[in-house]
Length: 98
Image 1: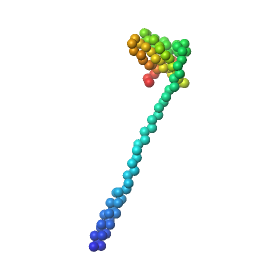
Image 2: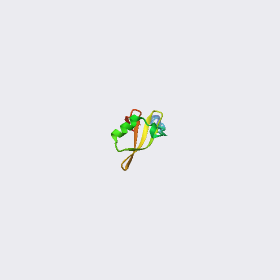
Image 3: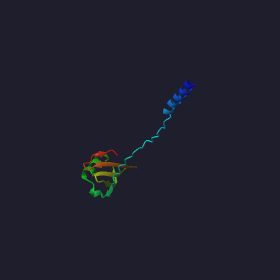
């Protein structure tokens, strides 16, 4: 009888070690949004390198609006035929992917 009680105590004791509560960890996703604040500028304020680069790439393009941010990156709203596009360039007239 003592062996039966002892073996039952050992079995129940060993099962309780596996009954530890599981901590539910919810993954936290951090999102970093880089918001480039562009301010509208006049067409005369647009660097010559940007307009020359635009005319080389899109000879029939018409600039609707131009914007600049604090990093001297330019956002151009351009109309080519029936399509309206938004292009990005730096001050040297190199095209940027955004």
